[in-house]
Image 1 (cartoon, rainbow, N blue to C red):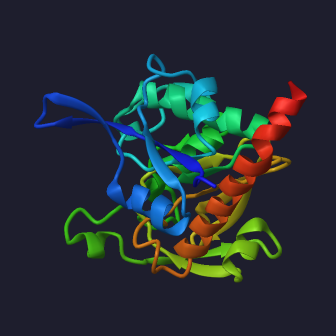
Image 2 (cartoon, rainbow, N blue to C red; image 1 turned 60 degrees about the horizontal axis):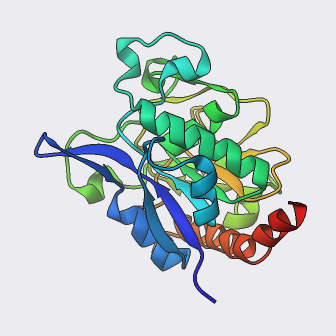
Image 3 (cartoon, one colour; image 1 turned 120 degrees about the vertical axis):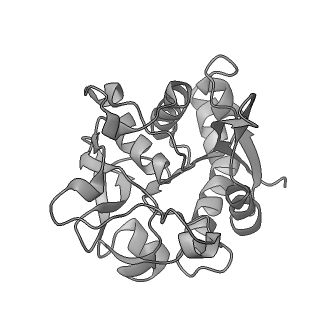
Length: 258
């Protein structure tokens, strides 16, 4: 049987400050191909090019990647400020709709960093523009200098809920992760269950209550060295297993339902 297809949500990027592209980090496609054992397919984040319905028909699962641009605060009813950073409204339009579509269909998705924030906003939640400005919070941002190994290094603990989906995947309630984000969850959406926190209380893992399929997101970057990391590897394997189950059963269920 052909491997399932995972749509990797791309980011707008200018090469040499003038040539527009839709891009996704190679570590994302490596994790999907080598650990999830699926076919990675980069999705252009532009709603003019393909509808959400078409994308969900082509893909068996969706990976919502990290990115420099932040979700526009108008998506959760707030005015933009300088602290909110830069935006990509086209990615907002694609990614938020993909989350809602996956939840409705029971189609698997995994959110990472910005993708974690997108899942919360798509489900009616809000975000803080800058976590490090909150009392008692640590700086979760990527170090501005150093090698990739230094920037993506494991930095803090995440504690997940006993008996929850992340506990079942990791086989532990405490795991060590990296941290490379500035924003974070302010108020979770009505169906968003925060199932993992950093020691400073920052939400780091979530799932969607009542979702019929794999509907998980993490605030860290598990795609970094996913084939070797003891936390990343089982997460991407579980995602791949969910995509294989969808490819084998989920599509037929949708067709039978008309």
